[in-house]
Each structure stands twice: as C-alpha cells, then as structure tokens.
Image (cartoon, rainbow, N blue to C red; front, side):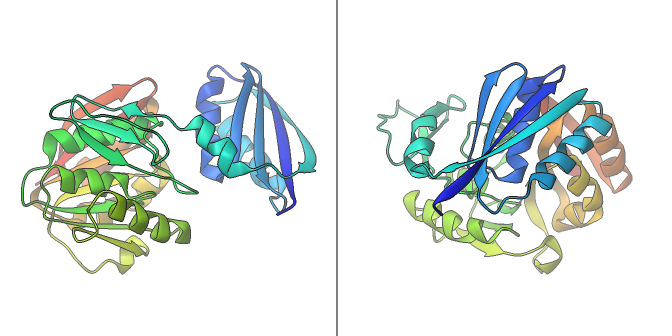
Length: 281
C-alpha cells in the first residue's frame, strides 16, 4: 500500500470525543482529534468515502451529531506500525489488571496481573472505556473453573483476562479474520493458548452451550438482534456481561434482556459508556 486516505471531518457535536470513539468501528488506520470540531481519520487507499459519510448520517439520526462536512485527501503512505506504537501505552485497568504491549516495559506490583496485548487491526487495547469496564466485571464475577464465551473477541483480551482469573476454558470468536491470528498470538504471549479457543465464526456457528459467563462487548444493535442467542448460551444462573453501550442504551438493552429471561444485577458507568451485568433465570 503506497498511498492512504486522510479524511478530515469537520463536525458540530455535543461530544466530539464520542464521535471519534465510534468512528473506530470503521477500522481506520488512525484518528487524530485536531480540535473539538475537527477530526482527521486515516484509511487505506481503497476505503470508500461513502462508508464514513453513511456512518456519520446514522449518528446524526441518533442525535449524536448536529452536522458534518468531509474532505478527502490522498497522501503518501506512512510507517503505520511506527505511528501506532507511539499511541499505545501501559494501562492500569484496576488494582489487579495492567495492560501493556510487547514494546513497553513494565514491572508489576505485587498481586498485579499483566496482560500483554498487541492489537494490530483488532479492537481491544485497553484504551477504550468498554474494555476497561468489561475487565473490571470479569475480575468481579469470574470464578475458578468457570467456562466463558467471549462474543466478538477482537484481540482476545477479555477471554485472556477470564482465564487469568481462574476460568478453566474460554471460547473466543469474531467474524473478522484479523482477530483469529491476532487472538492466537496474544494468547501465546500470555501463556493462555491451552485455555482459550480462538475461532472465526458467527454466534450461530458456536455449538457449545451452558457457559458460566457470556461476554459480549459489541454494540447496541447487534446486542439487541442477538439477545435470545446470547442469553441462550448461558447456563441457568450464569452471568451475562454486556458492553459496547452508551448510557442512553441502558433502558432498551435491559428491557430486551429481561424479556429474554435474565435479571439485572448492576450497571457500571465510565464516562459516557456502560457495562450491564445480568443473571440468567
């Protein structure tokens, strides 16, 4: 790839950082927040401008964005690996978990668990609030000998965290082919290869059931569409951990999941993002 696209987004929004967070769903090479009204998004040369335009129109319809304009420029390629490495740091998620990439040094304090994660093109560096929320929920609810299903695993980070908390088996899958190789590599980095089964699949292609914990850090619409399947994978009294959700998504998610046979245990808020914890009846 000798060229790449820089797409400048000029926007009026109550929360521009939230728009920036959501644009990572389009898997850019990078995003720069130039100011409260300007974002620069970087994509491969083949990226179609209409993809970001349509996505921003959806955000506009959802009242997350008042208006926007786009300017596309084609530029000579950068060393994206070098640029990416500049942005990834050691992240202290909780008193127990710390996340770091292979190229950063960190000496853990007593009792800390270090997750070594190189995300490449997969979601799950620990930078995002939803990843932090889910790791904290795993720390609280995952017990020894539990079985875990991680839906939309990305880097595999949540499944790895679960086995570090004592789960004896985790199945982690994603429909993005990038995640298979990246997830396997991250499992090996964390000595979890024998405990985490990484797959490329859709939820309907996972035959196993009766998991002690079902994890889904995706987004509101897929969580609503997959509700019965997600709940169906948990055993009776099993825990369902959901994120990828904004504060305003809470009521519709809880209503849908309660109707599918769960009880709401708690909602945890971090900035504008939430995690929802449920127990299957």
